[in-house]
Amino acid sequence: MSDTMTDEEFDAAFAKAEELSLLFREIGPKYDIDNTFAYPTIEKFKESGLTGFCVPKEYGGMGGTILQTSKIISELSKGDSAITLAYNMHFIMCGMTMGLFSEAQNKHWLGRVADGEIMFGPFSEKRAGFSGLADMTAVPQPEGGWRLYGTKTWGTLSEASTIVTTNATITDADGVVPEGYEARVEAECFFVADFIVDEEGVGEGVKIEKTWDALGMHATGTHVVVFDGFYIPEDGWVCQWRGGAFGVLEWASLMFASIYLGMQYRVLEEARAVLSKKTLGATFGAIAAAETKVSGVGHIIDGIGDMAMRNELSRRVLYQTCQELIDGKDDEWPVELRFPYIGLAKTFVAENVMYMTRKSMSLIGGMSFRKGTIFERLYRDSAASMFQPLNSDQSTTYIGEYLLAPEELND
Ligand SMILES: Cc1cc2nc3c(=O)[nH]c(=O)nc-3n(C[C@H](O)[C@H](O)[C@H](O)COP(=O)(O)OP(=O)(O)OC[C@H]3O[C@@H](n4cnc5c(N)ncnc54)[C@H](O)[C@@H]3O)c2cc1C
Image 1 (cartoon, protein in one colour):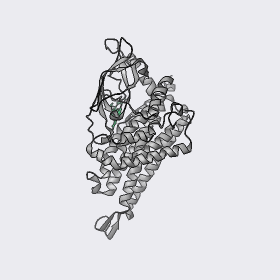
Image 2 (cartoon, protein in one colour):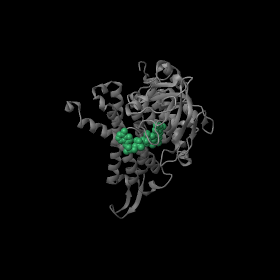
Image 3 (cartoon, protein in one colour):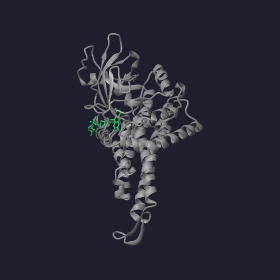
Image 4 (tube, protein in one colour):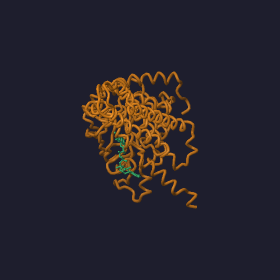
């Protein structure tokens, strides 16, 4: 990106994010209980102008870098991580597509995003998850273009979006998937199209099945999206999926990390607010005293310090990873390790947020376990960090495989 934001432009956008974050904070608990998408946020998000935050200036956007986008997302997530995780899909797809779209596609689609439209990216499927090759098919049409057939089981933000990006395997004219692993990888492609559905979530050849019901992250609206003959015109083909997306997945990994960094800020804020004031009165036990203020108890002082340390380390790991990418330092990493090394920032922040949500409950005590407290909510929501790419297990597998079979040893 050549023309980036000035500090003044960033400060103005950040102030918008702070405003939106307050709204998310206020209404988040209602949508957690209602277990639905936070509908009133759609217009507010559009009005904030942040839809085009990371869209390059040449396409009408603000030109935010990956580091600046990370800061905006964490600020929003501090207000409410579930609502922000929904809009995070928009930022992820803007970041990924700008590196994959043709010039004409950038102008058209990112121009629309800069004007306030929202995009989403349902890729994961029931069998295939995220890393399995897509079972969804793209059947070539006699008039040109393709029709999509298949089901995406994780469609975050579908209810607010007017642009869909997704992946499918191109078949022959009869809908038969190519045989053989390599041929299948080659045929799996990335597409973009208009996403027009009615209030029931039904459109031409596509349907949102409003089935999202999970342990946490209720307000994400991560519904199932069924494609049944959904038409993609010829100019909706973007690139081959695996070769393309895996080269720009930092926009997924690091934006997820930003969500959980924002959640860490909130955990620390809420834990401090309770623990700095809480008094146990007269106690008989580990501490026997006529009056015990928890802010003077050793393990509670250490616990807060420990959480603050993890939060600060997470911030540094995430910001430094973003900065190294901006500076092109990733060119110095072995190419096989680029993806897992970027993923490390996400897994580090994720492991720490899960630790912190558990730790804060243990420090605060049983009241934090009651339904409706922010702590049980953060505990549930933080569990989602295990699943988004890259997960910890796959990061270590990538790195271990490389270290156990380097090319030099094969020679
Ligand atoms: C709140 C929330 C919102 C989401 N929103 C979206 C969305 O908008 N769009 C979207 O596309 N996805 C979304 N996802 C889906 C998510 O990112 C994962 O794709 C999904 O959880 C399925 O993938 P998985 O790896 O968790 O499970 P599976 O793919 O079923 O994996 C099962 C096990 O196999 C392992 N495994 C899988 N593949 C490999 C491999 N190649 N090598 C080694 N081990 C492997 C996994 O680590 C895991 O242990 C969302 C998830 C959450 C929690």
